[in-house]
Amino acid sequence: MARFAVRVDISHLPGVADPQGATVERALPALGYANVSELKISKSIRLVVDADSPDAARAQVAEMCERILANPVIEAYEISLSELAVS
Amino acid sequence: MTTRVGVLQFPGTNCELDAIHAFEVLGADCELLWHGSASLNNVDVVIVPGGFAHGDYLRTGAIAQFSPVMDAVRVFAAAGGPVIGICNGFQILCEAGLLPGALQKNAGMKFRCEMTELIVASARSVLTSDAEAGQRLCIPINHFEGNYTCDAATLASLQSEDRIVLRYAMNPNGSIDDIAGICNEGRNVVGLMPHPERACETLLGSTDGAVLLRGVLATGLRH
Image 1: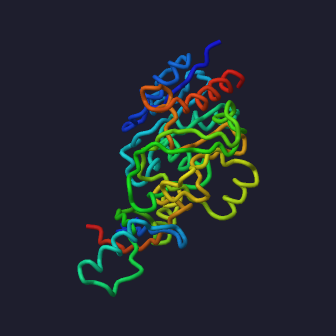
Image 2: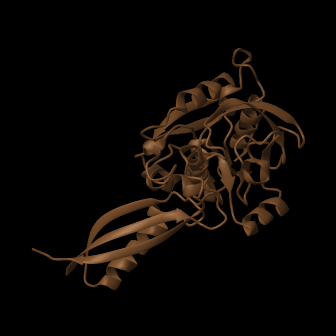
């Protein structure tokens, strides 16, 4: 059994409006940053999971994303993980 | 016969007493159903009221879909029982997969709390069965995440199957196709963002919500 630090980035699917990102982007020129575009706001979830292998950990987190962590109707998710040294 | 209305209550629900009041004024017997209960106590109608179930943490309705009472609601809905999700209740029914699509943040990032004019798009649902297609209703909204969205295929089926039941006359939140409310294929599960329970008494500025709630009570008895 190994231990993995997992980070899940949850963003809007292409074509789904990101009014939060759009509003922040519109605020930046007022501060003098007129060269910013494509600003998107996403969510990041960090967790630790014990599993037999990186593949098993990734598969479980993907299942958790489909069931609760993300809403596949409007959100995409990206999983990154790294193995932790078990003391 | 009196229709028995069960109103769900999650931690963070805040419109359950308004819903009970409105239905009682219309002659129904109402009871609160705690989200941890696995039974619906044989009610005729289930209302998923507005509020912030489980704090709306993660996403609106994301945690509530897994409350024990929702398993009973799924069984009730599958048997044809009338289920109405109002505001946060609509968000919960979408997350639970009882209705298609999702509700995202309002276009313009504004919390909208105001009277809206609705157009009954279809009278073929448990919610609109006493109304007429084309009828205009003044009913308030009160939400930040009421911007209905779905993929093109889902929208096409909602349109072709006459499952858009309410539209906004003036779209307040960016909802696709001005959608304010939709129903499932069986037409017994309906979700809407406006609050008909807040438009049932003259004192509140409109009584137009009563035609919707009366339709729910009538179909609840027939079920």
